[in-house]
Length: 228
Image 1 (cartoon, rainbow, N blue to C red):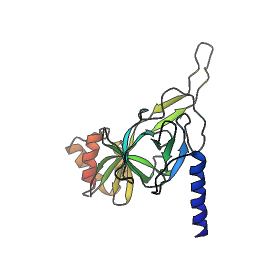
Image 2: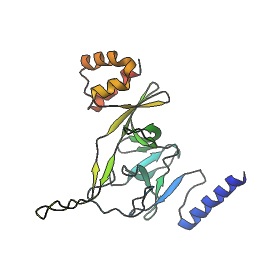
Image 3: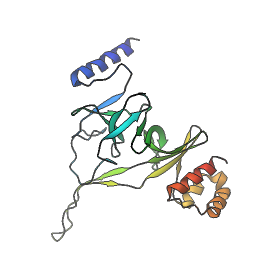
Image 4: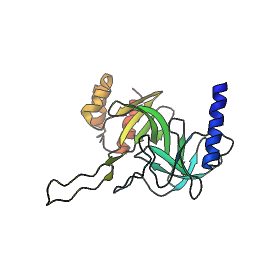
């Protein structure tokens, strides 16, 4: 009980120091600024070509945990942070280790926090895009932007390559019940991911001319997998 009280006092002190205004509801935030790219490793501004954002423009969003309120926000895919602008100077990043569902009102694009395993086998908690969600399954998308450091020219006849933020290919996940599984976009890898249904999947993909690179076809495939 004493530990929880200390945590609450520390949080209140943080708000007083930073001047962030919040309502009486509980909110988990990390401090960020518009000109600093905040991550677990660095808070310094990164000079690079390209952008860490899916869309740099702040747009109107609704956060499911704050019914009846609207905010303006943008998604930083490099840091996997949903940034919310509180006023002309203050920007906070929602704590993606907590449960959040964020919808951009102009496009109805919705992000939600999930715990999942990446292509490299790392366990991660972060924001995924809800492509389709119903009582039987959810099709999710991970948007990725990676940072590539500058490279020195190999010879005097070449130019140095500047540091760059680069949009990578999206990856997709299927949620059945509480389990979230990677949906590989190569047929051989997909069949290995679902070995018990590999024959049925082969038949379905061939019969329906499923292209694993197309999102609409992944919706059809996800619906089918939810019936197996």
